[in-house]
Amino acid sequence: MDDRIFKLIAQRGENHLDFQLDYAEATAIFWVNPSKLNPTAFAVAITKCLQKINSWDIDLKTFFDACEPAFTPYDIELYLRSIVSAITRNPVSFKTKKPDGNVKVIRFIGLEKLNEEVTNIIQGEEKVKRWGEMPPNMLNSFKFRDEIIEKAQELGLEYQVIGWEELKNQGFNLICSVGENKKNSSLIILRESSQTSKFTEVKDRRRIVLIGKGICFDTGGLSIKVGNYMRTMKFDMTGAALVASIFLTMAKNGFSKDNEVIALIPISENLIGSDSTKVDSVLTAYGGKSVEISNTDAEGRLILADSISYASKKLEASEIITVATLTGAVRYALGSKYAGVWTSKEDSWDQLKVASDYSGDNIWRLPLDEYYLEELKSGISDLKNSATTGAGGASRAAAFLAAFKNKESFIHFDIANVSNTEGRSNFGLAPLFKTIYFYIDGRLNK
Image (cartoon, rainbow, N blue to C red; front, side):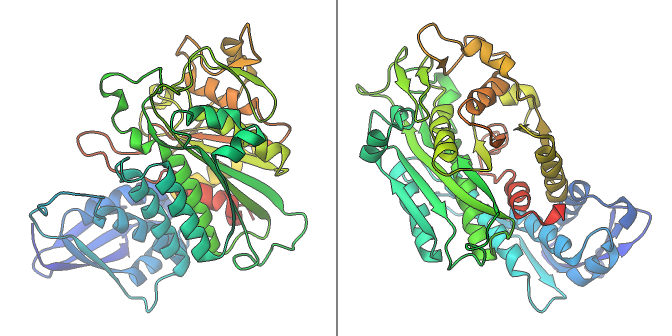
């Protein structure tokens, strides 16, 4: 590969999203037609271009001029810097020998100063990826909890940590059941503070409670995962990593005037031992429902269910959003391109679609219907946590979660199929970071 630094400029032209390399001059032209631009196609095309050469100077000003009015300068900087960050990042590695070959270097020229909000968003996405990639012996439930709290303290956020004993005393029996073997469950609550938000005294803000599944490793419990199914289970905390990092990024950039956001992060590990929760156990959830444990490997919905009940009863949420690597079934439903989304209200879906289209994320709406609870009826309790059939499993899990809310608007993201890359190299991803960030921020719907 040519090791010179090539200069990349954008120009308007009919060869939309094509590019032309001039090896003699070490330059390249990227062609755009503003009337045909969309974030997803733009990202695919510019990535293809940037992979042709090892080192680039990207003239941002030419992209601003060529892409207006379809993309604003902010949009272009967000898209290009996100793409470059993904291309040039170094995943977590403990190899003693550094890889051979040239290091890919991509620089931006044409601006005196880069946008600080964009910088914080990209750093937030990178934090999600690195948390996900950390080996589970190095990022267990206690270490993950402590790292989130350390970041919250640095930013001056209000926070609360409910540890094992207090969880038990307050009736978070579903959260505790997952960590029963090592007594390692905890619940983190992050809130805005006067130091991080100008709007803490503003009345009538809509209260969004954002909940992320934080299972730092999932063996399946006594319903043990067999064969290769336990591999990559270190990524089972990606939902919590997203929620924590989105909240921390909002604290840096400034919270929304219209939407107050509270982060709820239940953290645990689903391990095996003599004290592990047994199949056929019946537990009383925080919200009062009785739940039969028919499968200990359906643990994510347990920690989320208690968190949803808490958000509804104690936090008086206007809207509850859950983000989780929840089911293998979502991969069978959607493959590895689209994240599954369930919403209780049409306008929530409409606004999410605007945010995902803007961000270039792929989401697909699936049915939130009590029909799916039929297979979760139990002869001994209000519900059981898993069915004997796998058909409709992702929607059944969503319906199970919705059963623990009251009348709040509800959104559920199942990201189990998009949380990490596949194959021999399992790298972390930050799925839907921008979609959720801009949905809560609300600027796209004004």
